[in-house]
Image 1 (cartoon, rainbow, N blue to C red):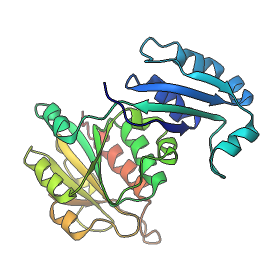
Image 2 (tube, helix red, strand yellow):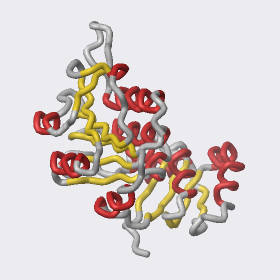
Image 3 (cartoon, one colour):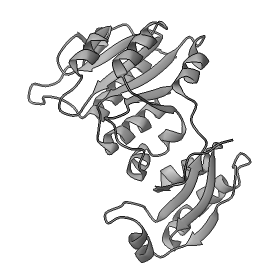
Image 4 (tube, rainbow, N blue to C red):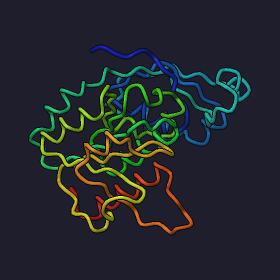
Length: 253
């Protein structure tokens, strides 16, 4: 099995989820005494799981040393894991794996750049059973520790793909009987009035600008969330969560 290069992951939820992921190799775990005392039972339960691919070298580190290792302002919660993950299946293989699957949810991100927003969307998507997230290769945040922490373990539970041309990808998915649903501030149908299809791609636009024109043209329909006039729009991660909740609330899956 081939692996990606090693990376640091920090934060309690992100680290424990990474340790539980059988596709990851855990190399080194840094932890403060305070954090160890707080989560020791949960951590030991995770480390003793049969599916754990490897046991990391555990090093006790002072909070001062933690702050020296990681960038100023890093919210590490006194725990960090050096790990490497097996290479993700490519998008073509993913498509092949869902050809005969009746109900599929994919979230597509059109130039969403903030790693905290993307991380929050990943976390929410994992909670609602999304199969994959697609983002634009050149206009998306890197898979950084900050993003992984914001995802709070969700990144271990779904596929994350980067594509060169989102419009082409949407057309490809439409050929496989997916409905591409664009999230809009004020255009299209109200989400409560829309019948949710079994195979859907929920397309979210960038912070501030929303969906690009070409992306909108490749959506089958635009839907919106009715808001009070005093509030012009919602944060993209909050809006995505509301849309996904509505999808699940209509007995999808």
